[in-house]
Each structure stands twice: as C-alpha cells, then as structure tokens.
Image (tube, rainbow, N blue to C red; front, side):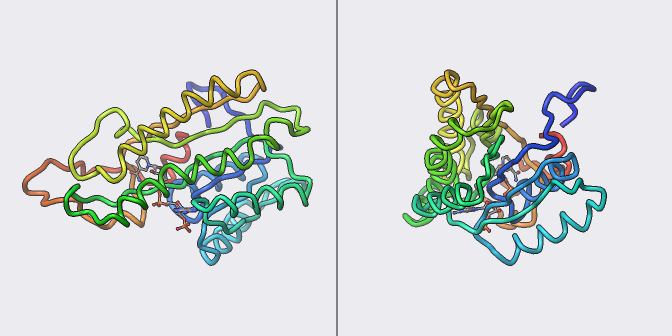
Length: 235
Ligand SMILES: NC(=O)c1ccc[n+]([C@@H]2O[C@H](COP(=O)([O-])OP(=O)(O)OC[C@H]3O[C@@H](n4cnc5c(N)ncnc54)[C@H](OP(=O)(O)O)[C@@H]3O)[C@@H](O)[C@H]2O)c1
C-alpha cells in the first residue's frame, strides 16, 4: 500500500473483508493485508480454495501478531440472503470491519449476438450484484459500528469502464455501473464518515483467464499482463 513513498493506506490492526478472495487479486490482496498487520476475512463461494488460502496466508506470515486472525466465509454474494448470513456472522462474533474490499467479479468474453441469456445475466450478477448486495446488506451495521478508525469501502471497476471494446460486452458495462455505484455511494456515505474508493485496474494475469474473446488475428490483444500479486501490492 505504499504510494509515492509513504503509506497512505494503513491497515495494521484493522479488520478487512475481501470478496472474491478465493483466487486472483482478492487472494493476493488478502495476503498483503495480513502481511501488513490486518485481520482478514476472505469471502467467495469455493470453500476448498478459501480454506487452502487461509492456511497459506497463515503459513507464509510467521511473524503475524497474536491479535491478528484470518478466516473465510463461503457465500454466493449474488443471493441477497447469503449476504445477510455474513452480516449475522459478523454480529454473532462482535466483529466490526474497518474496510470492505469488493473484488468479486470476472469476465466472460464473447460477442453480443453469440452470448446466451444466462451468460448475459451472470455478467450482471457476478460483476454488479456481488458488490451492490454485499455493501447494501452490511451498510447499516458498517456505518454505525463501534470502530473508531476511518471506515472505507473499496470497489473494483476496470480500465474498461472508460474504454469499451468489442468482445467484453458481457462485462465492461457492469464495470461502468460499478464506477457509478462508487461515485454515488461516496456522496451518500460521506455524512457517516465512510470513505468510498474505486479501483480501475488494467489487465493482469490470473488463473481463470483462459477463454479467448475473439480471433486474435483480427484484433489487437494485450499480451503483457502483470501478475495478480503485483496488482495486489499496487492496490
Ligand atoms: N484480471 C484482470 O485483468 C482484471 C482487470 C481489471 C479489473 N479486474 C477486476 O478485478 C477483480 C478481481 O479479478 P480477478 O481476475 O482476480 O478475478 P478472478 O480470478 O476471476 O476471481 C474472481 C473472484 O470472484 C469470486 N466470485 C465470483 N462470483 C462470485 C459470487 N457469486 N459470490 C462470491 N464470490 C464470487 C470468485 O470466487 P468463487 O468462484 O469461489 O466464488 C473469485 O474469487 C474483479 O472484480 C475483476 O473484474 C480484473
């Protein structure tokens, strides 16, 4: 989190919830947060990956403080009730998060006329509803919680929010919606002292990136991608 030489985003002793933490950027960022002294709750659907990520984070940070913890919650954030389960879990443990990182999301490249209704719908669910429902379900508890530190919500859009291009029509309009969500929440939550930021990463490498959107001979494609853990450090 070092930007321009000094740490503008201290996370030591904070409780951070990270969605999309079963792989890619969410996992890489969770690791960095724990390394830097935060307690972290990883959220995604895949229990096996989440559980293994928790073990790896703990094992790779032997000098963590005794007050730090790392846990996971398995939930499908596109289902509102599953977000309420997360809320109830936080209440039952008397956990008061300081920071929410909403990183769940992924693209399914394809041309508009070739995408199925299900694929279009998943684009909306995975890239927009995961953030919308998660923040909404936790919002009252989060803004009124006892924690005295600066509360912060971080959304994850993409550079495609500013530059839409062929092959990503299932995904990029939702990343523009995430930008709009962040811009509006920033105003609505300011009276509660909650900061809202939106990340706009460029292309980075992660395991799920397998499907080619279109014939690469016809269109220019970026081939140099930074790894997700490098992207996590920059965030
Ligand atoms: N990769 C890039 O080049 C790039 C560029 C710009 C922006 N971004 C954005 O950065 C973020 C992370 O990208 P990534 O490439 O690291 O993603 P990724 O590897 O595809 O991982 C997506 C994460 O979202 C979780 N997720 C998906 N659907 C979910 C649901 N219904 N409920 C809960 N969790 C769900 C997945 O976990 P489960 O499957 O276990 O639920 C997984 O942990 C995304 O928002 C992405 O749009 C990526």
